[in-house]
Image: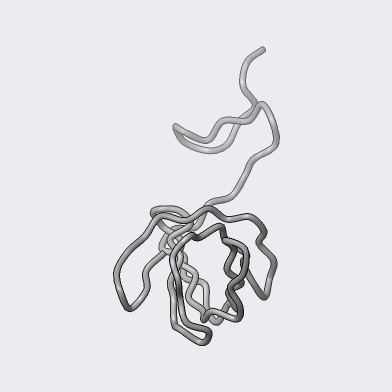
Length: 88
């Protein structure tokens, strides 16, 4: 998690469309702006809503994704050319 005071490791406990609950053992201020890096290509920006018992609630303001990923049906391969069923 990126805060005004630096970058720290945290663990996501719960994720919804409007918020994230993380395990975080440092003090953060309510209303502090934060950014979570969920994957190399996904950032979630928001602000701290609450902190208690080693957990922090974050209200999501924006999600940014630099890459688009999608899934194919099980057994399909699209690594070389058009998607085709894999040979059994």
